[in-house]
Each structure stands twice: as C-alpha cells, then as structure tokens.
Length: 245
Ligand SMILES: [Zn+2]
Image (cartoon, rainbow, N blue to C red; front, side, top):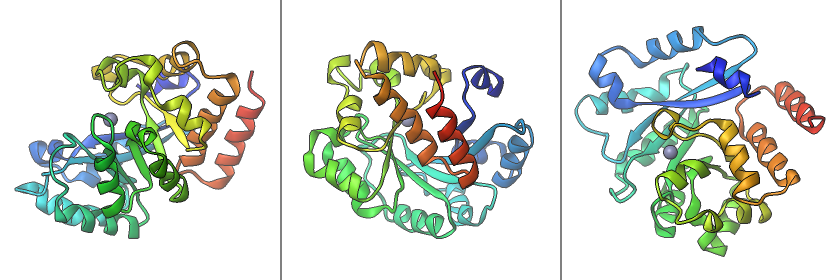
C-alpha cells in the first residue's frame, strides 16, 4: 500500500485501525503497532491512530481505552462511527489523557451530522483535528471558532461525494473553508471501501471543486502543517512544495 502512495508522491500517511480488531485477535495493541511500523520504508512517515465509536467503552474495550494513553507507539486517537450516538463520559477523560500523553486527538463530526454535533465535540473533547467537519461551513461563528482553536479539518471530497454526504460538487464546503483561512487537508478516508486515491482527491479539487492552483497548493501545505513530524522535515517538505511544478 505504501508503494502505491509513494508512486503518487505521498510521503506521509495517517491511518487508523479500529479498536474492535484488538478485541477480536486478542493481541496487545502496541505489538501490532510496532509490527506495522517496522515495515515502513525509511523515507516514508506513518502515523497510526486507533479509532473507536461513541459506545466503544464496553467489554474488552474498557480495558483498552483505560490503557491506550500509555502506549508510546500509538500516535493518536480518532472517534468515528455514527454521529447520532450520544457522546459518552469516558470519551472526554480518554481524549484528555491522550492529549496529556502528547498524542493527536481527532473526532469525526459534521460529516453527515449537524453544526450541533461539531459544537458538542468542540465543547467536550480536546481535539486537534476534526475529521470531515463539512458542517463547519454552515455557521460563521463555527468557522471563527475552528480558526481560533487552530483546528485542522481533514476533508475527503471524493468519499463525501460517493457516500452522498454532500448533495453535489457545487455544495461541497472545501473551497469556501480554504478561502476563509481554515486549515483543511484532503485525504482518502477509507480507500478500500471508496476505491479512490490521493491523486483522485487532487483531481477533484481542480476539476469538480473549481479550486485554483494556489488554493490546491495551500491544501498540500496544510497537510505538512498538520503532520506530526520533526520541524526539519516539515520545513524541507514545505520548501519542496514551493518549488514543485
Ligand atoms: Zn472518515
């Protein structure tokens, strides 16, 4: 999979595995993360996130959730799954502990869900990254809040289109949010299900979302701004983008 990404000039990947996998195979999460990371080529950066849903704190999930903030190999957490499930108490505690342990903290909100879903997540979880967050564009004060809190929106236009999270290309909020100065990145969401590539996402920005070369370049820069990499690599990668094309 990484070879296919490298062929598209991708140098950095954040991907997540679902907590349920650990429950099924019964192997300690850190062991799996170490195994995956040991297979990554030297000139490529992989960051691994554990994803869980809003009601994952049950059964074996409890033990894993109480424990993961101590897993040094884990780079961060993501809350995904149905947005209409209530945000439970444990999530705030686990996300706070993850943050204190220096991990990235993401949450899916505003993909299919409402402005209120995003507000609830921003009110209660110390997140650094909002996954999709399409609904942010529906509320000016939310646009301001996301900018103030310096939160990155990781958007997936092709997935949104295929899953009908957006009714048509013209109403996709990415161009508006980029113009408003929100730090947006694009990525493939769930490529095994969606069947898309990073290149498809960039083509969509140019062909379907009508974004300018400079705006698209800004999105690529945003990826490096949000990436958890050493400053030296960030600087070098941003410079390489500046000189591209
Ligand atoms: Zn997603």
